[in-house]
Amino acid sequence: MLNKGTITIAGKSENPLTVNRLGYGTMRLTGEGIYGEHPNRPEALQILKRAVEAGVNFIDTADYYGEDVTNRLIYEALYPYGGDLVICTKVGATRKPDKSWIPFNTPENLRSSIENNLRTLKIEQVSLVHFRVMPGVGDFEESMEAMFQMQQEGKILHVGVSNVSRDQLETAIKMGPVATVENMYGHAQRNSMKSHYGDTNGGAEVLDICEANGIPLVPYFSLFMSMPKKDTRIAEIAKKYAISEVQANIAWLLHRSPWILPIPGTSALKHFEENLKAAEIELTKEDMDFLE
Image 1: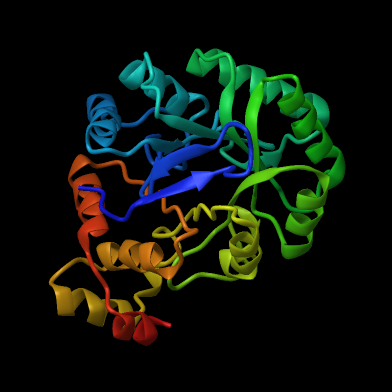
Image 2: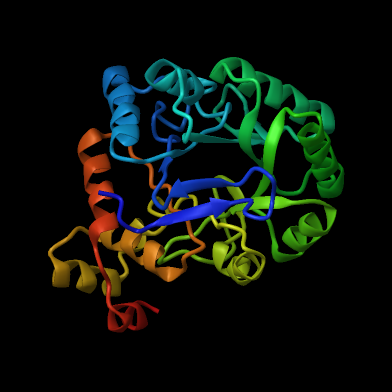
C-alpha cells in the first residue's frame, strides 16, 4: 500500500534508520485541545495497530500530548515493538492545566522529559528525539548541547530539531549530527507564522538545507493548518483525480521532495485509511507545476 519508497534517517551514521515514506503523527489521539484522553480509546488503539499492519513504521509522539496519553497508547497497542518500528518523540515543551503550551527546555527539563519518555514507552533508548523550540525562552545552543550529551550517554540514538529557523538549523548542524527536522509544512502554509501554538517556523525556509545535507524534513500540521485555507488549486487537483483535498495535500508533500516524510495525523480510523491511500496517488509534473 505504501508505494512512495523509503527514506533514510541519519544515513551517514553507524546506525541509519530506514522507514517507509508515510508516517503517522499521534497528536490527534488525545482529547479536546490536545489534552486528556481520546474520547474513543479502542479506536485510538485500533489506528495504531492498523498503521503498523499497513507498513507505517515511523510514529511521531510526545510526552506532552495528553499528557503522556499517546505514549501510553503506543505501548498498549504495539509493545513489544517490531524491529523496524521507529518511535520518534519530542522534548522542549510541557502543558499547564489550562491546556497552554510552555517551554520546558533547560538541560534539566530535557533530561527529565527523556527519562519520562523512556519510562512510558518502556524502552531503553529513544530512536529519534526532536528538540522542540518554543518561542522566546531558553538558550538554543545550551539545549542542543544537552541533547547531544544524552546521545553520547546512549539515551538517544539520533537527535533532531523541531520548529527551527534557518539560523538555528545551521547552528545545530555545526554542533553535532542532526538527523531530522520537524517544522510546520503544508501546501497552503509553508512559511513562518503566528498561531495559538506560538511562533511557528515553516518548512519552506529550511527545506533546501535539509536536501543539501541529506536530512529528512518531517512536516507537522501539514493538514491542520492547510485545510482551512481551502486552496482552490488543491481543490482542482482533488476533483481531477476524484480524491479528497486531504489526500491531495498528502500527495503533494510526497511528490514535493524525496526528503519529505509526511506524518498526517487523525483521530478516526476511517480518515486514517483515506490518508494511507494518498500514498498510491501519482501526480504529474504538470500537476506539481500547477500546485507551485
